[in-house]
Image (cartoon, rainbow, N blue to C red):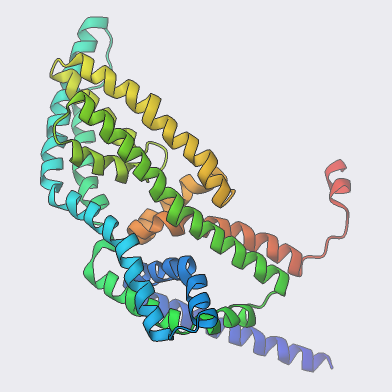
Length: 347
């Protein structure tokens, strides 16, 4: 009996090792297509209920329904994002030129303040390093992998087959995961809520900041207001600094050009109005869609952008949330608690 158990365990370890090795090999070979797969998964999660309703309740044909939902996704989701990023892509040169202008302006502002208040704020060398970082990061942010035609083509190619096999995928999700049904249901709910929160909530918050910012830019009469609207939208999706990456440089340029009133307005309006919109929507809209801790969102976006490009805004926080959820599920599935948690805490 013990030999049989040992043999079964040996076979299990062999198959697990084989699955892991094949998974690693597939990941290495298909890594460049990962953003397309993640994009397809995102749209599928957002629209699969519509697919099931139209094909099972309304009795629409699967092929036509899949194509219509893909067209809807392209018009409503991809087209606005594509136009926004394309607008910024065409002006990368303009932005880089303005980054050098920003450095000149920053040096002037720093020099004026140092002379006025007799303090040392920053050396020219450090300011030049900051300018180099901005010039290098702009093309990387704008040229996100999500914007390539190849990625979009493969994303819709994958999405079509996901729609055509919608119910089978749901069944396979429950059948092949080696977890209890209740834990699989938790995992499914967590993935759905996180994708919904990030795919809808983060872009909506960024767009709201961009629109509010555009109103202020038009009122104060800044140059290229619609360009800065696009920068505000993109920056609004980034963690920690957010839309300040747009209005703070604008204020610095205004101060350097002796437009003190415009600079003060941009700072007050930026931190007071645009920043408030960001905070209010994050604690209301995102909390309703998925109650995610802000630190998970911040570190998740940082990780996601480095790993997946633009689509990492959605799947970065999801990875951290899933990691924490899997730890909880593993504890429930495989770890037997010997003592009550309160007894452990007391000792």
